[in-house]
Image (cartoon, rainbow, N blue to C red):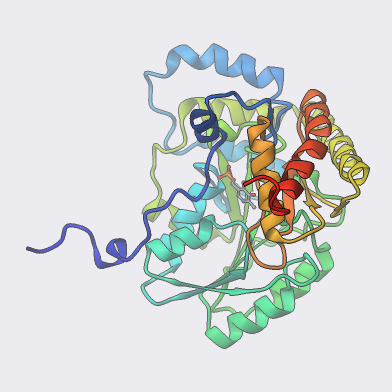
Length: 374
Ligand SMILES: Cc1ncc(COP(=O)(O)O)c(C=O)c1O
């Protein structure tokens, strides 16, 4: 009999790439006390956002505006570009799927860094493409290697994020602009700027909406504190942005998502407050690490990568020990990066809880490795 699934689908692993804190709670039977693993914003959205969502709650029987007119226009005016250069989608992850669908045919190559944020890779595989990776260089994405590999492979896409997840490092705008200018026209640069709000001045290249092979993605999930609403957007050249209408899920961005994001964008004073809290939280995380004799990497994001001081196996044991102590963190898995755990900035009480439990988790991990505990 002819199989129902396509050949591509049959060849894909059935996987849960992001084990959520909810799964950890179900497994352990105890609640997470410090939810500092998914780079969410523990500070939450602006009170104005919560009020706007509450006020609109009774209208959820209506579909959202399929053109996402108001939010799209507000974003465009904020960015200083025409609305035709902005598309709104179900988070960056949703937009990644649409971009892969638009540019990846079976056999096409996407180039990215080994251990970088993985969502785009799943979508590339889902459309029969091939992901080729290059290693990080000194905990930063290696622009030269990405470019050289993309040229050698005649890649359809280069995916990179600036600032980067999972290491939190970044390139300055000038370096990025030179990199983008050197990428051949046949290769799309997919520049993920999920953490743009927390990056230092001089990190984001000026917006260039004339370049058909450049698309930049941003989100309301991080500094705006709306991860559960699933709203992201992409900025690019008019015809490329127009192409999203060929494939997007026109009712995918929910009514409350549109309301919440619009209210979030309008409250820039709240955003500035969060960005300041994130900077203070990064410093606190670095000092918690230092108090345990651990180095941490300077970060432009809402998380800090902390070097557990030994190998990847040890870092994984620290993570597991933290999990048993009701602390949710994640970690890079790629060789060369995997000695780190990645800790999101959380509320002060969550970081206090971490400060208390990290030394205990480290001791438990060390004990387990020395064979005293199975
Ligand atoms: C680099 C990067 N891109 C995209 C996302 C996901 O963004 P969204 O919630 O808009 O799908 C994340 C979330 O961790 C991220 O780190």
